[in-house]
Image 1 (cartoon, rainbow, N blue to C red):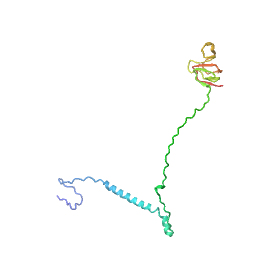
Image 2: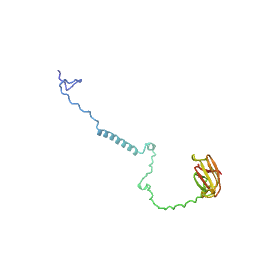
Image 3: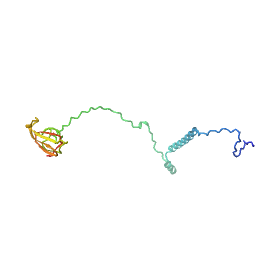
Image 4: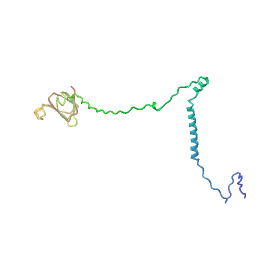
Length: 190
């Protein structure tokens, strides 16, 4: 058996059985401090170059052309102070009490020309005088309408009445009472 040469080991040779193996070292993580230092230095250099370019007055072509021709004239000096800044105007608060508008005078729309199929109406006050039409019964019992001289409900006050199965018309005069039950909506036709 040969003894390994630690000075110049040469090609890798597996240790013989029973020889002590050195412990494996964990892999090294890159240093964050080194990364920050590298990036920070690059940023500082870029900032320094940028400030230098900005302080030189732009691209330099205008100044370079003026120097080359020998006619360099000094430009005006501009001084900016804090007094030149626009100041906001003071806020003025004024209390104004609003007066309510008087209600608009609306014209009374007058008696209706369309009304529900159930109810009692005074012609000329609740509904307009004229001829009205209905589509008929609002159910299976038929549509009942009645023209009356007054609202007494007595048999003698009835001027005309009818039970409709289908559509119907009735002409109402001012001062009459019109009663309707189980009818669809009434609409004035003339």
